[in-house]
Image (cartoon, rainbow, N blue to C red; front, side, top):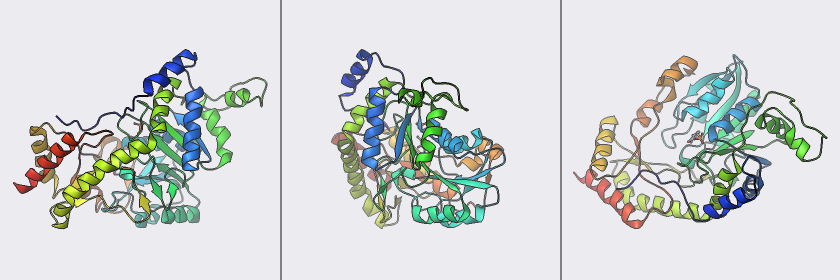
Length: 376
Ligand SMILES: *Cc1c(COP(=O)(O)O)cnc(C)c1O
């Protein structure tokens, strides 16, 4: 049996979780949360990082910090997880979906300007599979029209664009540390803030609308309710799990890349022959081996492939049902322009099992079985 995913585990998690419990600090913003924030800030050269309860709540925070409100419009790809859009809807704004590029499955930067109206307030980009969107072009468009840029970098921890960490290029970046992501804390995430003027509003929003962070720094002598807020602080127990992972960040990354490259070697000949297509990595991008996918001929070919793998107890997976064709997408949003690639390309895509510490025997099983499918 080869599962689609196994949550990353390096071994030190128990030690740190025990320390969090023994320190009598299992609520938010304890020692491990602070350590994780610092590691992420230093490693990615980020102005400010705050752990959150999920990637979704990081996106919610970003949408709220952009000041989105009823009637505003936000541009995003339709090929993404619901969280990217639901953050926009939380604020009463309208998601405006734009087509993707078939080579990276990221928003097509050339189709963004067509979707801009006088109601547009922000662009939410998604770095699919840890491969960057064309950020220079997107930032130029945003600047020209005075728009916020939020990077849904849920899948892109450790990836870069022209040497810059993903999540640090737009106004806000959002990471996920869900168990299906490269680094995990069970459920969790982080918001990256690139302009310090948002640090204090973010602290207040994250801490139930209070100025408690200021109080702990000794900047006010008592704390109180100062604005709208929610609770976006993860438990320090979860942060302790993440801390162990971040201490082994390179090892996890290299291990995933090794599996990715093994798959690449195995499937490249089929791509050269035109039987399948593989993920394109633009020259400016360094990726983190979050996903290895194949694009088959069509939906029928993909269905057969998934069934064939499943017969050998190998679990390949597809996603996403494009948001503009989902019930909520139709209720809350609209698609701008033509759906040239979003539906067609999403129906062809299948992801192979890829997780930290995937043993050779399992990787070989996946490769052998898949190659047999294409030989039949
Ligand atoms: C995983 C993911 C999210 C949500 O992250 P959670 O931590 O599960 O809330 C958002 N966007 C994308 C693109 C994701 O892959």
